[in-house]
Length: 265
Image 1: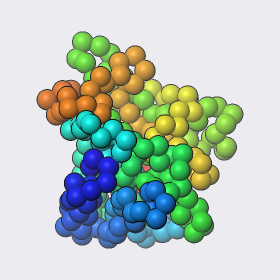
Image 2 (image 1 turned 90 degrees about the vertical axis):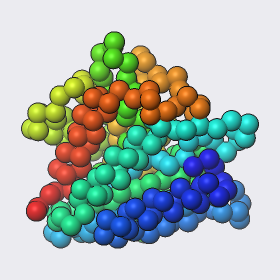
Image 3 (image 1 turned 135 degrees about the horizontal axis):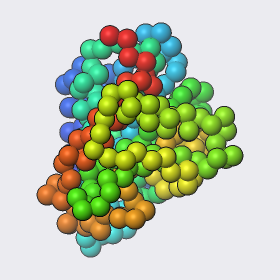
C-alpha cells in the first residue's frame, strides 16, 4: 500500500477478504492519521483461545511499502514487507480450524513506514494504545518485517530483536526469543543462523507494543552487516529473494507462533 488513496483501500480489502475466506474472524480497525482525516486501517484476524482466551498472542506485519511524504517515488515492497505479510497470511490459513490454548491474532498493520511506533494515531501505535486502554493481556507480539533477502555468498543470519538486558521487565522479550530458539531446535529447522539481538531497536511495529507495556520482538533478516539496498525502492522485488533462507525462516515463525499460542489440535 502506498500511503493514502485507493491503492491502500484495495490492499486492505485484499487482506481482509483472504483472512475471511480462511474462516478466521476478521475485522478492520480504522484510525485517524492526520487530524480528522482517515488515512487507513489495520486488518486483524483472530482465533480465540479455548483455555486462556484472554491471553493474546499477536503475529504482525506491515502492508505499506513507503512513507507518505515520499510522493515522487514508489516501491514494490517485496521484502519490506510483503515477505512478512505472506508468512502471517499463511499462518492464518494453516491455523484456521485448529484449537489453541491462547487467543492468536494475525495483524496486518498500515503506516509502519511513517513511524507508527512513535504515534498512537495510526498503524500499530494506534492498535497497541487501544489494546492497553481496553486492558487487554497481550502476552507476546512478534513483528515479521523483511524476511527474504540474504546474499547467498554470506552467512545466513536472522535476528530476533529484543530490548536490552536490564530494560526488559521480567525478561519477557527474551522469553519470546528463547521460544524461537527452542522451536528451531525442536523442529530441526536449518538453513540460517538464529541470533538474539539485544539492541533495544524499536524502529518497527514491535516498538509500539513496548510503548504500551507489552512483550514484543521483531523477526528480521540480517540488517546489521548486509542491509537490503532495495528497501523502499522499485528494485525491492521477489526476484531478489533468497528462497531457501526465506522458507526456513518462515518455518521458524510458524513453529514459534504455534508454541506461543499453545497448539491443542
